Image (cartoon, rainbow, N blue to C red; front, side, top):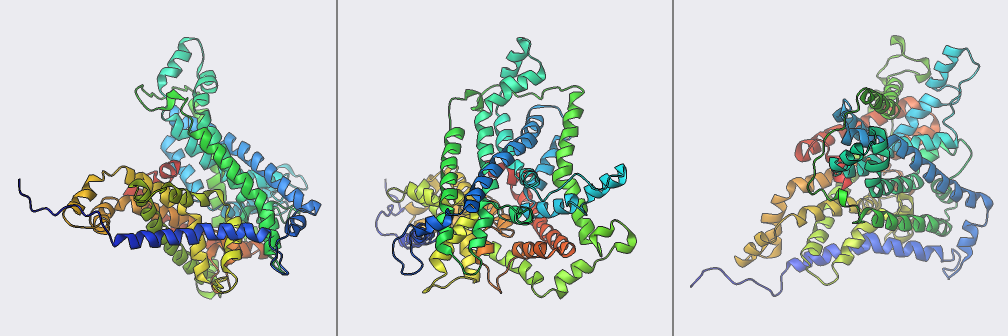
Length: 568
């Protein structure tokens, strides 16, 4: 039977130029800085020859080794405390009839979008050893000479990091618990186990792989953070790996020693990510297959109010108290004078927006660089995801691996790699907007790839083949069919990159220049100067700019789009 359709073209397709450009950019962003980081750790700063002297310098002093030990202890302690915060909440929200479950999810989301350095500043206001509000309240109520709280301590740093890392464990655990059938719990109840014993012996063990995966992610987050340790650990006179790396960048810059010092942190991260993947990919937990079975809320009786009280305690520590006192400082002439009308003022916001030499510009930089990085990351990861899912080239999976590889590179380590690769001539990008955009793009490639890949796998390739049968090439299919169908997914991925990119500090602190300071660096500088009123105002401005982006994401992707899409 005759047909007017043209045959499917299998020869040269100009779209291959696009694929080649995407692959080249991916190699430039991921492979080149990583290789340069390793080479720099063995390069002599004098003659460029091979040497182990950088490793001797990096670990030749006891305080350098102690900083590494401190980081490992910090990560372990923060992960355990975050688990104590998160696991009961995840169980109560996912499995029980605790009141306010939707509200608790909103609180977790509010914690999730709060930058860790903002939380650290809030808890400095709350638990500073002399002027902190909790210490003031304790002295007022008890008549004691001093309060018991001191945020400038190792336990204080553990507390702050755990408080803003527990959403990772909540995400993993609640996602797993929502797939557990109530039949397992019914069987335990028939055999005489009560609600709490069933939870300890049946429900949580079934979600153990997800819990362990969340604990590992929390551990990695804790050892990779820079801002919170810099604000708390340095005044407390102890170092962790990230603050020690920052000191290697003081004059004179010792980038080779910093690269050598970063290698154990990179090694620990790679090893634990592999362990986390092995744990969460285990197939032996048949109760988590999501097939069959029924899930009914467990009736806690009066215990539901006990769980709600615990949820509100965590919410008070992570959201309510911090934001109350951040707002107090932001609208105060002097934050230590307390809540009074004669202390109320808008001058901090006016100063930040209209008088400060660089504060308003730093907000603009953060939004501009975040938008540019999000756009670049979505384009690159969408192209790579298409190549991988449609198997356009041999060993396409390697490209997918390169997209997720930055996940195992802490921000400070990534920044050192970019500094080593692109700061010297001929590129000489140090201090420019370009190096920050490239670093932010690279850092958040995993988010774009995970979301783009999941979206493309859900799309039947037959529609693209139909375009090609009618004479179009793959670029036409992408432009006319694939992108329009996945525009909501791509918007969600863009927002998931844009929001954290606007507040990224770990890599920005090593790469910014006089004209490219971003708001996260400005907040850090103000914390070192003790300008908490201006700092609080700037932090609230950043949060206010984030909320419309969150609202757009919720409208486009669903109410819990950040939590649920991160869980993927």
